[in-house]
Length: 513
Image 1 (cartoon, rainbow, N blue to C red):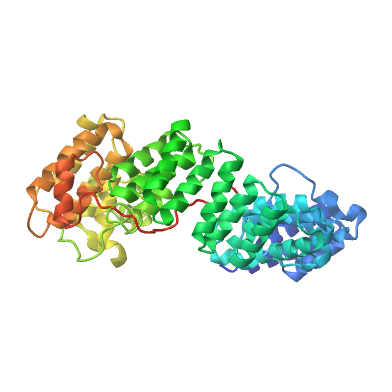
Image 2: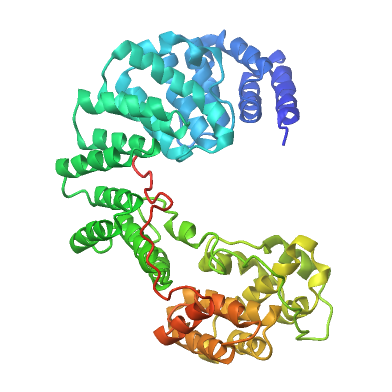
């Protein structure tokens, strides 16, 4: 969305306030304008007028806890105008960390080679590390351009300060995120040689991984372990790299060694469950991981292992691709309201991150009465065409959020979904079955009951056109007994315990920088 009109409105108000001598009001409007268009020349012209005033205008943008992002940027520019750009850069980087897709740093004073020469290399390294943490790895495509000016500052600083290990390592982390892999390897290697350390080897290992130089990456990460054998997060890094080299048994041994020391260390737990699932394809490992995530909401790092394992897998990450499902039944003889349909359309979609994520996304449907959710099952044609194939799923997930105070075995939501599960296999049957499966992921106390219901459907549909659909759902269910799981796997004509030992998607989380 083009935000320049909003910036120009704020700019006009700032100009009027400044002409009237109301500098405080003008400062507020300029900060708001910067938040919409950080490089608009007219904004910087008015900032120059503030800079010409007493104290360089800095008192209009005081240092305070959690200031609006536009105020941070305004103070950064005024500091640069006052000849103190090295103090302004961390503030500008904080603004970039807040909204990385905006071109906060696309201004002349950031591009000056002199800035890299005068800024303290340790301070720049810390600034860059905070920025890296905020933008992720790799940086989203739309943020690469706006972040490149910071890489230029690092280049100038490296040219001026030589082999400063922390600066080289932090610069490598930024270069890697921006797709400059060769530069990332070069800087990380120089940093590790200039001052050998655990962190230096980790930076080098990550850079080498990005360059697909996996054996060298593994060697660097092993050296990091040697520096600090008690840092279990490095064990997870080594395990992930071994797995990508196809050495899955060794990788699992590294996770087991780390878990013996701390069974709840989050990085290792996530990696271990992911590798176990990769080894045998049993969904119980992902369910165990989901349980861990639910029981440890304050993990030190953000992890995407569960989502990546579920992605592109029928029912774990979305509706199965292929032939449209048979038409569903009409559970109630009623028309859903327009409001109910709108609420359903807000959440409906053919993909989800994982079953607990699908359950959570349907929470808003608690505002739709159960009878209307049932009516929506009967009228998928009322939804937009691209949502019709998934409407039943979300209506059934919505039923799970009604009567949650009732114990599962005596609940109306259980009774309704088991009722929908009966009869011939159609879209409604499969939607109800998935809702039950998703609920089993989030409520361990309901798992045995739901597994029994799912097993019954598998036994009833061992052959015929619906057997594959039921089998795919069954393999997503927690707590399914092994004979039923093997029967479902055989129905799909895949091994019950597939061994996946080739190189797969990268397992390493960029957690440290």
